[in-house]
Image (cartoon, rainbow, N blue to C red; front, top):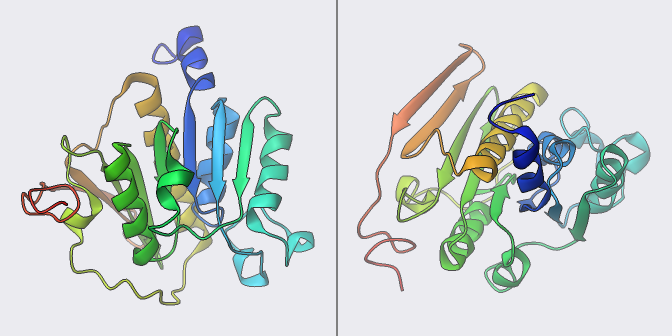
Length: 232
């Protein structure tokens, strides 16, 4: 019924493929909406297992899944939502060594991880492969979304070049992860349908305490070591 989709758009989604790194708080809403929309092939990449602290936001998993690999639990739930979607599960930690092999062959990469270190790995691999990369991050009641597709846009390293890559434990309101993951899915679907990027050259910032969304202009760093003149 949506003129922006229609029968042809639905066929386009059925031929599309998305690699999602992370099957947790951001991955749960993103994967759910991508599967429900009829994406033809979903790649799930995550090395973690389900724990009690995950359950306030990672709704692809339940109490009976504790101790199980997240990619297996997520694959089962997604298959129940849409059995026509091909789901490829990789129980693996994404590294610079394996990222190229795991992400190659997809139309789009969606990041749903909780550390800058892994986000930078995704960014480097996506840039090297020439793949659009939608990045999401959450912290407490707040979150951000970036659509990286150089040379049309900055990459993650252009915007956060000096970020601490050490993984730190942070508190996250479950609904915040749901909002950011849903925004990532929305962007992915728009891109796959029409190559439209409504936040091109902008960083989306969500503040759940103020209930606000702001778009901040960003630009490429011509000397960026990943996508600019400093890239090797």
